[in-house]
Amino acid sequence: MIRTARRLERIDPFYVMECAKAAEEIARSAACDPARGGESMLFLNIGEPDFTAPPPVLDAAEACLRAGSTQYTHATGLLPLRQALSGWYAQRYGLDIAPSRIVITAGASAALQLACLALFEEGDEVLMPDPSYPCNRHFVAAVGAQARLLPSGPAQRFQLDAASVAAAWTPATRAVLLASPSNPTGTSIAREEMAAIVQAVRARGGVTLVDEIYLGLSYEAQYGHSALDFGDDVISINSFSKYFSMTGWRLGWLVLPEALVGPVERLAQNLYICASTLAQRAALACFAPESIAAYEQRRGEFQRRRDFVVPALEAAGLKVPVAPDGAFYAWADCSAHSADSWDFCFEMMQRAHVALTPGRDFGPHAAARYLRLSFASGMPQLEASMLRLRRELT
Image (cartoon, rainbow, N blue to C red; front, top):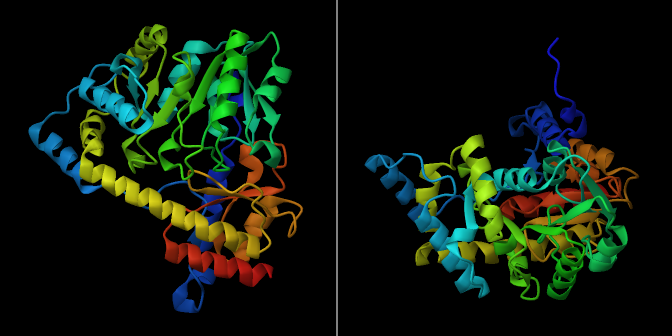
């Protein structure tokens, strides 16, 4: 037998994918075959936009290939792309972010891995909310540190607050890792609370890391701010996958304190050389006026879907205690129908042929109570799904 590393013991299975496999198997069955009188499976379980990269981005990728401009880039990424991001922060958020503080990565996953490798080691503790995206805590675990999940309920918008951070801090605590807007809840941290969290962490000599991959998909002005506004010591993780509709291109970025750029660059050089050159050159077109106009139209469409889905879930007895203000997820309470969201989601796959995600992945606190619905799918699919859920539940 091949002996595997002990670190694997700290990495849980990704149950979202287990559920997805089960949904796909049911979708192939006779019950979901329209030719036999069945109804096709409707997938509201995976967080991937139904929009793809707009034409200027596709044209830029094709031009890059035809010109043969596919050689390695600098480990920190193409300077024009870093400059474009700097300009985007200035235009959209009023922030002065030097291009030298931006590191282009192979998706937000690589950004989180690099940040964790640069900052954490055995014995360190990182505070995170429960619920939160499972991969984020596994990046912490993979470097030997421990993610400490703090239960966060509706009163806290399923987020951490400064008081809970201060109360939970121990000599082993090194950082907080937040996400605003969050996956799975779609909720954000209010500006005043984010400022208080950053100050609480700073006062204790810690580091604040904020996953902002859904920040471009904020729907409420009071939450559409970047944590970078609260000091150059804040680390932001971002991605071209969600707002910029480039999921499979695997392109993200970090905004770092200047002192961390060199260490992260050294790690990137050794671990993967650079992010995809093709993706980087294509991403330059994301900032063209016609691309931004398309992205803003799509953001409006996601908001329209949210405004449809949340009341529809409530009508089916699936209460959404905090309406999402960003991203494309609703965190719904299914306890009126089942004692376990895992069982409930599998039951809905079988009866309604609607694939949802149970809460198990996102942390143990109230995991049996909540499920995640993704409204990244188009309105016809969402409308059909809500009709089926109401049919089965009311």
